[in-house]
Length: 452
Image (cartoon, rainbow, N blue to C red; front, side, top):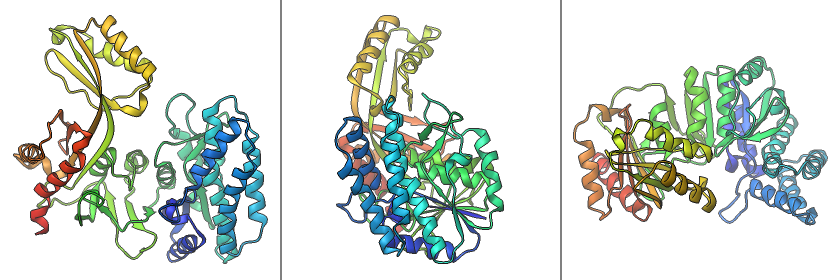
């Protein structure tokens, strides 16, 4: 059995959904299809998810929501008309949206989640209806039928019983069309996954049914060794390990998000990134292990939006429990951290800036100063993380020196260096204004000669 997931651009229009049907029909092993909400049809278009967020905010502010609701329905209607479906499916979608906007607004986050999830949920219903209309027996399956997730306030993840609940889908005779992006708590509360949520759903399904392959269809032929918007004609990656992909996804590889790897990684289901618009292209395979190549670096990625909490205290290294107390303050504010480079008398805690507000930042600085009796406490913003990744790095000497030399030629200062214990990644913290220049310089250092 093959589980395949189709992203937003792959299901944005009637024409794209027809391509999806042809792909699914071309291989009888493709029995489970996870789908996103309709994405952009062109560069200046608006995703259905964004339309739904706008609708949710209007409902929360007690505005007249009719026009915004109809805008969402019309997007689905244009798809349904293009697929020559009757009005029944649009009636179902309209009724579903009305029920959601009239739902409980006491928890605004959960209310917005419910509206956002309508994008995937209703698209799955529409696609299942289309499959049936062209003689492909299909069945829409709701996440309510088994995708059990945890309760608030932790970020959403599937509970172990979700895999048990979904395992019987492996025996399906029909094509299962399953909406991505969300699940339900044991109490029946809808919760959405973080970014790349439909990737996560597809991965959960692939793991649950122990699929032979998880195909992730998007709008690019493969994963590239660097961002093609920054680097001209980067090398294509034919095969990459879970670990390499996880490291690259962490810092900006948006083709496949890092959290989505965990379910398939645990049981060793390979992943194939493919292009809906060019399905014959081999794509990029993500596998448990791969043969060694002559190239130590597989890919280079970069991501901005990081902040650094810098703490200095004389003889910090002698103070038992200092690091624990510092991280406890962040935990109290529900903030996760990415890196903690340190010296004898100072430590930096790097975190994603979107977790910070003026209020919690002020509380953190005050508590660290007062409770830890720190000599100096600062919160600095505007950092990027540049990550160099490759299984071959472990057996390659001088790689960090080559990277640092390439970065120095851009005029940037390296604010932080961190190498994971697995030795397959090297992370550099830099001011985000240098991000693109550094990415280009590192690509030139590690890939230009290979291409030449």
